Image 1 (tube, rainbow, N blue to C red):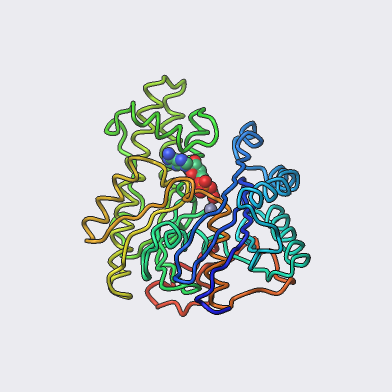
Image 2: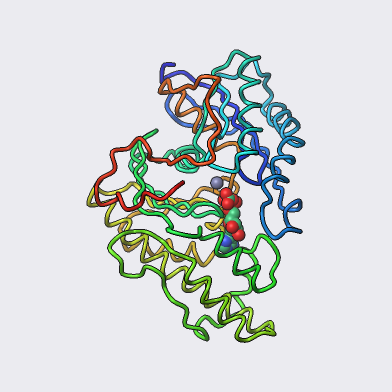
Length: 363
Ligand code: KG4
Ligand code: ZN
């Protein structure tokens, strides 16, 4: 498909606990526009279990997806015959949910005759600022969600180099686990942030994992264990204890994160030149204290901070549709046999510079 033609792409997202569909238009000049963006979070279904239950998620996607797609198409005011392509997140993620979304996309592609695009969910997060801010390559992406914590050099469509990743828990996962051990409800990130606002961050001196290391990797599990040890030492916890533990934990996360990003941005500049921006995405980016810390890191590195609006930072269909549209413009479509993938590295086809080779953890 020529790059100068306007296209309409349906995007489907089912890799975790959001069932989502959207229609996006990509204009010939490379700019984008959302025609619809329908998201149904399954938080209520999973809250009683304190986390996402894969089997429940997959069943909920089956129940919800048809209706969500119908809403997205109706809101966009188009029929399936007007679609230039059908994009679905084909991974990485919970495999049951991925199968539901990808199979549905294949059925629509088959019936409508539009090509299928099997999108990497991480690529969709990575390309979102091109939809929201028309951002030029290359930029440095910090992706922090419940499932992922990565610093990625976004050099072009399909051209990504992972500069750093977590060697254990994702940042959002650590927030959720700390919340759980302190008896706060799921999802824990917003709860921990709220409690931290009332707390004294100096009462506990928690470790700042990986601080000062020359690579840009993250580690959260030691910090999480330190919080657990402190909490069990003081049981039963008073509200003030919980607030102080949350404040101490969040401060440690932010210090460690800022250090890791400073290193990441330095490695980026050495390897790829100055980035057009530091981009933050993922549910954790909703944290106000974290936003302030990111702004400081960006300012120090003499770059701008770009954050897509919260609804496009967390999982959604528009990012999948947009990644599909960007791939379609380059003629990158997939066969109907495209497999669902629980694990799928963003930069698996990249020639990884040796200094980043130590980031070869999964997903
Ligand atoms: O991107 P997202 O909606 O879903 C995926 O994980 O893919 O991110 C959800 C994660 C959860 O771990 C949640 O606790 C965390 O983002 N989160 C936060 C905040 N809001 C959401 N973490 C810290 N502070 C917040 N305000
Ligand atoms: Zn995500």
